[in-house]
Length: 173
Length: 207
Image (tube, rainbow over all chains, first blue to last red; front, side):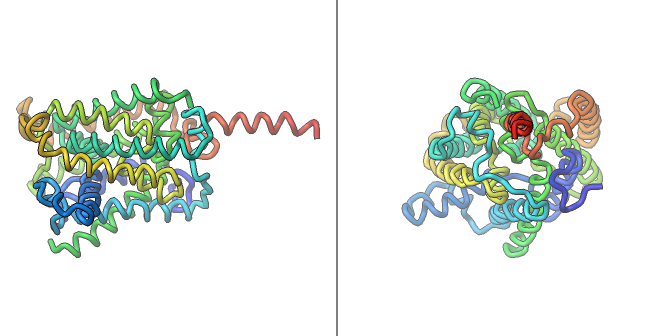
């Protein structure tokens, strides 16, 4: 029986709980689970403090608007960190500040190198996710469950890009 | 729904999502990079289980007419180009846009850089979006779903997908039991944990 203090749950227990979150998403917010649009809402808002003209781009204006869907997703994504923190504290997990796999994957123990790769990787993730109009949550969890044709194509491309990069650009972990 | 209630719902749901993702260990770089190097299949197990559960839930909610589906439009060129770039980012980040926040909550410092890069990437796309709108994002096939293409009700197709996924997941578990894929520190790291244990046991008798 899974408990709140376990270090790990079966992937099937966790997966079922994640899938059940579609119920409140569809019933209360009339949307599907997703994560990547919130980066446009938060990033666009911060950018507008430096360059107010960014709000003249319809895409940005639409994402920063004070709508329930936009800010539901910002709250949802930000709170992921809270849930993870609580879970990690309850299980008493002690983590290094950088996963030990990166020393092997990058062939370097330098934190500066890891931080640089992480920044570029984050940039690529969101730039790609916004071109595709969704990430592993919106296209993956939600799009595939809805049998969406475009989402299935997007998920296949994500795995193709991820497998190619992990085999060609990273070393064996 | 009012903005403030939507935010409260978001906080509650996000906390549950983050909790489940942390317990599943799917946010660990060792598990995500391991999946992309085809050495560890916990990510696929969590993902397919969540998709199957979502399909069953939506088959019921949509089949009984309680909710409308919200599929995204199919824009194949954008889905492929964007998906490939996103995939490369996922491998190098050892995270996806949602699990980056799990890594931050669990204490991985590099995830702060992934997150910052993500915000900059989203803003860079926003500046380029008017151009993308006239190119990659200009022509789509609409919000098409497979069940409409075949000519069956959505709920039938969703239950069929869930049934197929249950079989796939059962075979996956039989081939690679999840407990064997967690590693010593439940982070999908099979390398250093076993080698450090070996070196300790080699040193011990000498002492």
